[in-house]
Image (cartoon, rainbow, N blue to C red; front, side, top):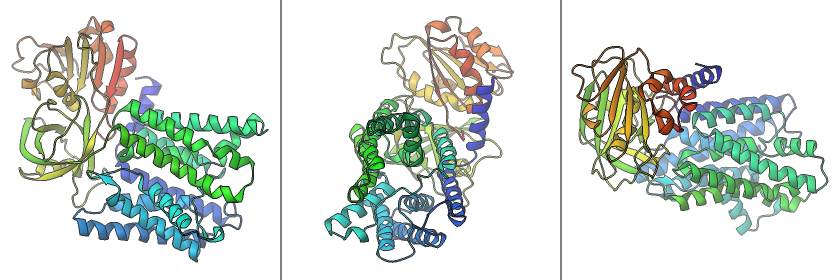
Length: 521
């Protein structure tokens, strides 16, 4: 394994131990502490806010978001997600200049309440249409404009997180979130486009390029926006190319009024300008919604199958139609007591044909295992879980004549079960197993040439299958097993360590390669 692969593997293993919600929550809490310390020593605030104001605003926002979320959840019968509510409150904390009291603090509280309401009101089939923090901030702006509030009494989003002192911490936090969500490229695209547009505009106003580059990073919340706002999965479309279009639209809208506001001091339009960055996020949310009306679906468990070696298959019946393409995934939400650091949500590849009336997911439950997996395999038929939509780009070429090589590590075979259901393709499957005693889902691997890579040979080995003795699945093994690899599109699925190890070697020999893995696998 080369240095790059080893680094990716290390990041995946470390970050995979913490759920996405908990990771974002911990990072935002760390930013709060850092910001308070910088304010206390005089690096931040400069008379505009104090540590006391930060503490007051934070408490008000936590109450304003979590209490309505809990109350509305009780009324509509949807349990409030505490971590999500706290994250929303912390995001709003960095959007509004902290206040110690007065009407401006009341406006901050209103933003929190509106953000909580948006999670239940501005929804489509159980999914957010708008980013809640942005909806709360923009909703407060609209209320103030409609009520014709005196400009001196208004409290608008000002993104005080945009500071040279906080920039290094925000950059690290944004990188970690984007890496964990597999949206680093998306964040880089947004930052590159928005930053370039702002720098060019500043230069047109007479600012030298080096100074313009510095201003564009230090006085605007580009990195915070990309890492903590743009990346929210519930308000992004399901396909990568759609997400990139949304990021580009957000970047253009975000940058449009910003440069002039950085150069020309216009207090009356500054309110609109800073609010425009919030509007940019909402515009992107609406574009994402137009691409695909994101939906959640309730799934009723009808059967649980044990495939041996800790591998399980769960068969669900959706309460409403579930549309997907072979290779895509869904996220299951299974609340349970004493949840560990990996949380109550987990992503699973869909392992059933697109025309099936049931939805299958497969998982391996090692010992020890996460509380989520233990709870999931304990479910009895009749139990209902919530799936928060379908997404993913691990789909096969539309041209069925393209030859394929599918490389699976352990439970990573599950998306290929959906791929293979259609038949009619030239496919070879290289399937790595920790031991050869059991081949999970063997009865579903028809219509292709199968090569088993394991330290011992499965007994009996199905007719037409090949066994290669190897303790682990490596790029060299795959290359030997598929002599015509250079003519095939290669798809690799499995634990991050395996994918990171084989991808570099295969990339040099394959016609095209696509990978599929999830941190916390």
